[in-house]
Length: 511
Image (cartoon, rainbow, N blue to C red; front, top):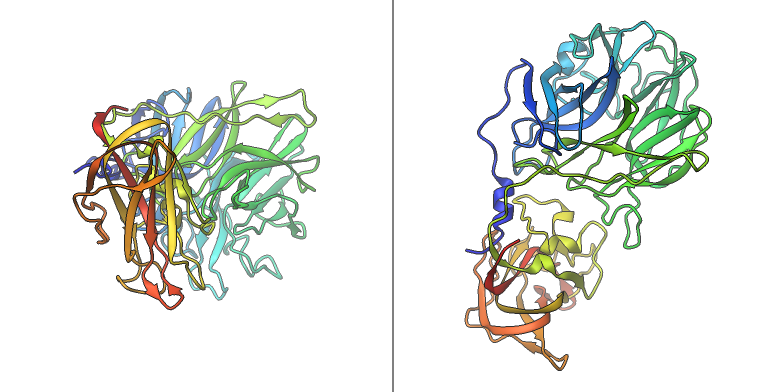
């Protein structure tokens, strides 16, 4: 069986899971910081205290095939010598749980939080949690807890309830109140930004770190803003980093409506107005992205999360750390593109599949929720999100015929193929996404004519992540194409979805 050995290995989970609340010391070998799949971490927020880096994160606890944010507690990674190439770390796996810190909070939903040090020297945790017994349309609210150490223990700094929700401060708002970021400015004034799904709000807080003292600022002008703001200051300039999504075929940021890149804006005032500047980190392996930036001993770092740990996924993320560099020749100083680095990976086994070496295209563009590059990325997810597969689906009327094409720079010799389909409808359906009615492969001959491969085994139509291989007479070509005929009739057709399409060479390939 040739199909997607790398995807199956990627999906394997580690048997050594981190449990309990005792600190665990380990040595990172690169990104992600903890890569063995023992403790998944997301939504990092860095803090420097006494030349030591503290990164609070939520713990991702979703099952391998579960598409849901299961986050029940916050943990913290600590290092005095952080290095993207690897360094010593200590993980505090349980710094806080919502219902244990806030009597008014429901269990779970330990979403993106931040710890900052107040002028009083204590440490304040700004935490988006679900408010129990809430009468609001959306129960998410932001609470504040305080501790004498970054790693806790934390107690509620505002026991009467959240400082921000859809009903406080009056008159409230209609957005989802998550992703808080807080800056204690040089003059002691405190500012909080929060919001998601394209809505961003800001307040000034009182010196007590919990009392809202200003009217709300509705933030505009952030090109593609989606969520995950990060507020900071350098050399008198305010910077707002954020997860951006302005999906489209020509997007400088996100190829699909599910992806996010990291962009930033600048301002001369902590409450704006903001001017969009640039994208500094393109999409990563997880659909979501979440920035935090910090200076330590004269060096700047960006922390974020990916799906690159063992057994990782869009809902089993792990934090990474890379260098952040500045261009001080510009005014205001610009953040340079961040170069994403990766820790060592075990050597990939040899494979016959050379599809990943091809350039992929489709005759007709698909909706921005799907991704053409998914068909030869070597990953098959049991429960995929739309960017994990390509599809011809259109909401009202899908087309009958679709064509996928591979092109190689040099001629290749092939004698087989396989295709992993996605479907949410049964075979023969004329709505949704169903298995194709039929499909076939052609190759480009030396005269640049398309010819059908001469196959000795049929084209399978069953939806399975380990499909049968279609064997055909050996061909030498620079391009093949797959034509997919959708199910349906009378002008009404289902969409076709493809998770992965393999092109099998006659000889084993090393990577």
